[in-house]
Image (cartoon, rainbow, N blue to C red; front, side):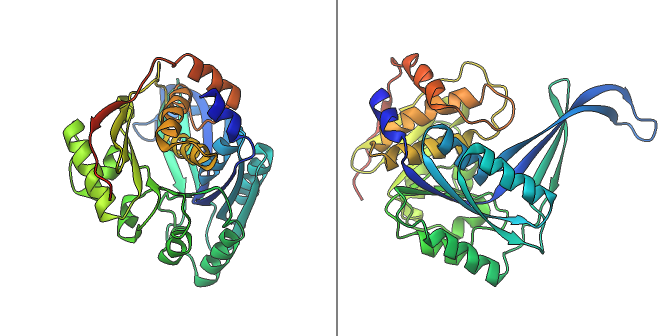
Length: 328
């Protein structure tokens, strides 16, 4: 793992997808409103973080990679804040301005460490043809990246022409959204969670056998070279045609918030493979990275040093081969 992490530094990764703002309002709830049977939250502080594709790029940068983000934003104060957060995180962001839609922003109201309410400001309609063309033009400028991450949150960025544009890259990593499964074809690696995989495969995942069946169907149905299926508290399953299906157990000690864990997984996977690692080794590292971020509240990005320390404590964790998987 140390040798792998040494190679991550400077690896160029293109992240394309739905960037958004995660806005947190922290407060205290000590009484019920006289207007309706709901708690009154007295806000004491606010916080803004990168979400979606922005958080993916932030994770790549925190681990020492060199990400470039291509996304959209509104011509509003939230868009200005999104751009500023990208700059503060230390990576290049090309945010195509869209005057006709707001910057996607998720506001979470939190009191006594409990989320009381989430309010979303967004427009999920398809992009206008000029905006979509400009987005694809920006993505083409980074076609030589070591790996590409398509971070699909279903907010309008992902469209058929973009997928066709990116499909030729040999290391295209895809974080899917069920509404777009009909569009997905020929990625190097897809990283669905159990809910997404169940919907994409049409098989309810309840145990290792159903996870194996669903993963095999996804490989075949969407022409994937590999698949990493995240299983929450059960870790992840890595599908490698010609090598087998491997289970990587979870390493999380405490789980406070799973928000953004998928972003960390795909960022670490793509960065690892882009740096020349075998996918299974990159998956082990991604599993360790995810174990760090679920111990924090909200989206988070582990640093390279934090990952080194966590990996050193997880040396005894070994993947288990679940089944054979013939080469395609």
